[in-house]
Image (cartoon, rainbow, N blue to C red; front, side, top):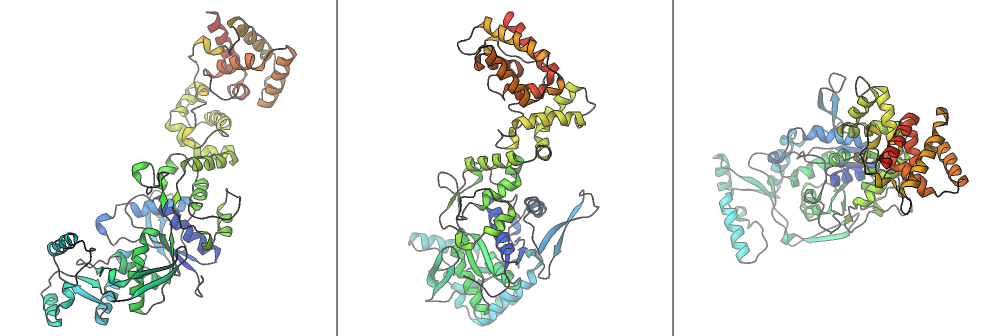
Amino acid sequence: MTTQRPIRTRFAPSPTGFLHVGGLRTALYAYLLAKKEGGTFVLRIEDTDQSRSVDGAVENLLETLAVTGIEPDEGPRLADVDHDMDELHVEEVGEHGPYIQSNRLDVYKHYALQLVEQGDAYPCFCTPERLEQMRTEQQKAKQPPKYDRHCLSLSEEEVVRRIEAEESHVLRLRMPADQTITWEDAVRGTVSFESNLIDDQVLLKSDGFPTYHLAVVVDDHLMEITHVIRGEEWLSSTPKHLALYNAFGWEPPIHVHVPLLLNPDKSKLSKRQGDVSVEDFLDDGYLVPALVNFIALLGWNPKSEQELFSITELVEAFSLEDLNKSGAIFDRDKLNWMNGEYIKQHDTMDLLMHAHPFYDEKGLLEEAAKRVGASNKMDQIVMEEIAKSLSIEQTRLEKLSQVGEETDYLFVNALNYPAEDLIWKKSTQEDTVLYLNALQDLLSERPEDTWVTDALEKDVISWIAENNWKNGDVLWPLRVALTGKPKSPGPFESLWALGKERSLERISRAIELLAA
């Protein structure tokens, strides 16, 4: 399925709150297709339902898209007024604006009146009370809910009289009768709807604002959109839109209805079952490249064994033909695995900048500052302490919100644990004291410039073998002495992170605890 026109895709969210991960996927697919084909990615804000618009939602949306790297070629964007990002405002770039629908009301009114003149739309003066009564009667008769075209039978004179009297009214689409509306969907294939089953949808509301159905068609045409990528929940709206394209005599875009995002129980992904906004996931410690990579694979099969993709690789591999029809399960375990892989691959010092807020939130920066006597928690020596913690945890983390969970022992001066935790399985208290004393003697003689993980591990393991001891009998009490808990990073990483002086102090404390 191709088009001879230059590729132009769009993302057209409503400013009703934070960006849903489903919205991010729609934006991502539109972005990938545009970049793959050397086209243009357009952002349009659909705010015609003013009752649902949320203050600050547009700015939040633009910030989120910027953070994820899915930035539009045309449309609204955030401009830095004072060059330090403290004061931002929304500006527009492109020749097809305005890109915010509430600034295009005259455009919609013009085209709505054109439809009325053509006989493809008509004024409807029905009150909410009459419409409610109509729906009630249809339900009793077990008829599908649909406007009964009461106002279509009004004479031209009566319509003019009521409009001149400024009687409240809407403009409705006059769906063509006895037609089968068919199109080739890029995902669903051939799709057909019978026009007689489709409602005469409201196009222009009494307040002068368009409904989604009129605005989306007018805007997509005027902005020269070639591909409309949206969720499959909009599938039933497409025949209404195609009827409008036909009434205007416009070429419709290629429609791409992507599958729903589902919870593991096959229900629609929603806030009721956990976080669903992009900001939620970023605040929980998911890296942007991992989240984008994961979202891309929800409903798209690259037809390869590769699972980790950079944004450049996603652009190169993306194809509409590889989109799936069935719903995509939002597997959080898979997301956690993928995020963990990205964390492992990250440069530690670069990752520290992303992890820093999570250490701060848990109070670990203050703890480190107190322990080393730093004047504030942002001192370089504090960052070095945090970097040690992160380098130990990095290969174990699934998300950055977990930082410090296994390395909190690095940030305190005193540990509190029962003496019996030091004894490995069938070992004894006496033997454990023997092992710890011998370790203390061995490590006391070690130069600080050789106090590094690999060298410590090599030498201590060899020393254990030379004494015909078992690794578990010796290393278990060492681990607990250093960390204060049975489940923790390995003893050699902990020796390195604590340093020689603190390590020896903790071994001495363990010996005293066993002797008490």
